[in-house]
Length: 200
Image (cartoon, rainbow, N blue to C red; front, side):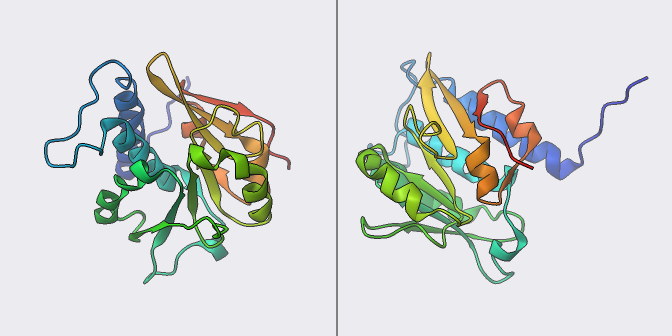
């Protein structure tokens, strides 16, 4: 008889949190996205969900030991472009991940993203994509963008809307080349599709 492997309480909580973020995203584009009462009008539910997904990527992606923050340091979530998303990120600073805090950096156009753990690239940077990805070659930076062909162009995680839902595309080859590992539980979600292969 097959026995289902039990998740420990921490794993169950993280998995529910990721699933909740994806379920929340299913309401986008259906007329239900309104600004939260305690936030400015430009902070939309849509961008709050994207911010929650970035937070969850910290939970479901493993970085090489050498690139992990030291005990007194923080995870670095960086944005390049995408100012409206950046406005939703400060709330993440109050939610430590794996015992470490989160530091938020809004990069300037001349910055490369080196030293970030997650780099979100706004759609307004699409014309610079080859240059940006080439500049990150060999680094341990998880690249995320909301562009239709992002993973096909070598990005790691692409977010796109389809039928009012957020879908996640993952380029396994790019992820593996950066020395990162994405949880099989995330990859198994129905909202997630993959391209490429993780080379041995």
